[in-house]
Length: 256
Image (cartoon, rainbow, N blue to C red; front, side, top):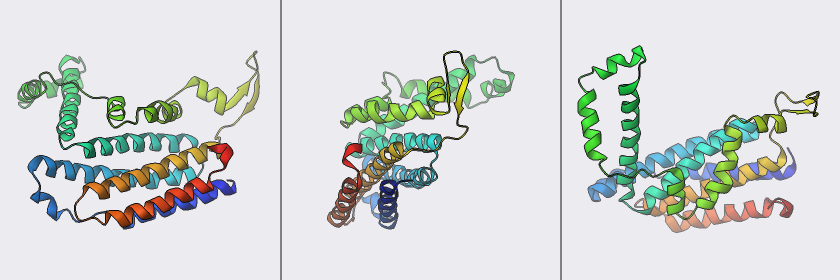
C-alpha cells in the first residue's frame, strides 16, 4: 500500500495498543451504584470489550487488503459503537435494549410456533415454550423496538448510518452491481474484458476504513473512561486527542 496508508496503519495500531493498555479492568466498584446503573455499566464494559476485539480483527483485514472482510467487520464494529454510545447516554437506555432483545426472542418463538419444519416440533412441546411465550408477551406489551437507525438518530449520528453503515453494507452484503464493478468488466455483449478473482483493498477505501476505525477507537475509548468510575479521564482524553491530530495530519487533503 502507499505510504499514506502505511502511516495511517501505524497510527491506528498505536491507538488500538493504547486502548488495550488503558482498558478499565476494575469493576469491583460497580455494585455501589443503583441497580439499573450497575447493569448499565456492566453492559457498557462488555460492549467495549467486543469493540476492541472487532477493532483488532478489522485492522488485520485492512492490513491484508481484504476488501469484503474488512467491510463486514467494520460494519459490525459500527453497530457495537452505536450500542455503546446509546447505552452510555442514559441508564434507562439499558431497559430499552433489554426489551429490544426480548422482542427478537419473541420473533424466534413465533417462527418456531408457525413452522412446519419437523426439526422444530420438539421445541413447541418443550415445557418452557408456552410459559416463555406468555412472559415475553407480558413484558413487551406496548413496547416499541428501536432499530440501529433509531439509535444513531438519538445520539445525533444518523448521518453516519446513511453515509458509513450503508456504504459498508453495500460491500458486506451480496450485490450484483458490486460484483461487476469490483471483480470483472464486460462489454454490452457480455464479452469478458477483465476479471479479478480476488481484488485487493485499494488505497482510497483503505484510507476511509482506517479513518473510521480510528474514529471508533478514539470515540469508544473516550466514552468508556468518561462513564466508568475511577478512570484518569483527562490524561486519556489528552492522549486520544494527540492520536486524532496525527490521523488528520496523515490524511492527504484530496482524500478528505
